[in-house]
Image (cartoon, rainbow, N blue to C red; front, side, top):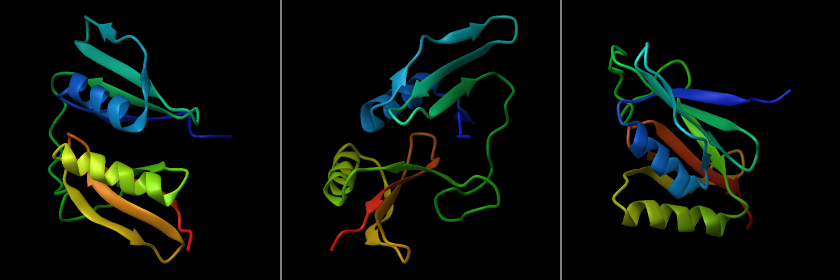
Length: 134
């Protein structure tokens, strides 16, 4: 068994699609549109086989949680695994150069990873990590 996909509601569908394609090598399907429900979505596929469904529809309420300073019960972040620590560092530099906020890291975690935390354009937490190698 595997996780097939995770879904995210957004108000900026194209911007979020472009972010996951540009920074995490995602590949997008054609936009699905249901005109009756005013629903639009993309599936972003990654090399691992896991997919991210990005969805937009009027009437979805804003998330009132402070995703930058606090964490709450429920799904808190998406994690992207890199092959090595150098690629983690390169991704951090790329995101920082393009104006994305780095919340924490890079750092060695207690369970043996080299990681940093950032935010996507909707302030969803993203973790980028690799196994720590001395």
